[in-house]
Length: 479
Image (cartoon, one colour):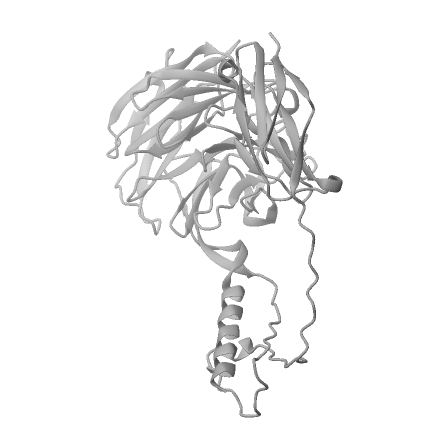
């Protein structure tokens, strides 16, 4: 009797654990409040400074900043002008800007529309009281600089300037506003337009961008993933399709609990946008939902998440708004599993007492015959062979290619769960990178790696090792 009770409660505990475990974290977003940003007529970029929601907006070619508490009550009596035409080379009006907060400082990238061949791009640094710390010129009368993206990795600041026909040229800065490096991203199958946004998470940059910003001509948003040096980890893939109705996708955030990605955009076929939409993805960029959240005609959204609240800024028809949404996590349970328990002795008819708090979790206890069936044993496929495809690779500089490693056993059976590690020859490290550096094989016995060429031409040897075997390929980087 006592043993039967113990087994029963054990089953209840197992069922409860399985019911509360999740494969994915679904989320709902509830609109709490919307305020009008009266110091701006275009652009609305919210950031969090550790205490307040700090909002930058533009009016009359100047950038102004105001502060709000987490309930969207304005805590400043007036907005602070942080940049105007006196900060530009030719006293030009400011056209566009982006804004992030990192390590106790605000960083704003702003541009002028320019004339003829192009314009200027600047990087501004402010302290938490909005006092100017420094400003530097990123681009001096270069190609069009409007509608850039701005992202930080926790240490450095990166400005992505639109590079027509390719994608972006990314400028890397330290906290003292020193330019450390530049990277060109896009081109070929990874070509993308401006109206983009980037976020840094799990040691990777995730970029979302349209194919074009031509009104009524963009059908898809794309996602491209990069490593810390802006080498491609995963090539461009479409994440949303809507014929002729997609434009700027400047709002991108990562959910703190779900680690899912959240984008916002104005759905419409003109430059003015349309109703504000939100698309929510899991951590692998699988689309979970795509819904309208604000009616009207809106564009240029930007977002930030603080605890369990999502803040989204957007503008339209000379009106700038900021909305807050409460995020609610909804666990998605694993499928219910019926548990059968074989008692060591036949139970009596005495009823079992079950806690009333979880009556729906009572498992089925089914006595079975005393003869225990012989279990079926599945033969184990032991790794004995390693193959690489293709066996050689030729890349242009800054381009990528995939290599598939296949692990098989006797009878050519696929080996699942075998770890494959990579190694680049000493001289090759200057020419290529490999991502990931190790990976386990899937149910087909395969693991796929991305090899990305750097700037230096030449040859590099990349080795793959698993199950006591090692094979390599030769990668040629063209001049």
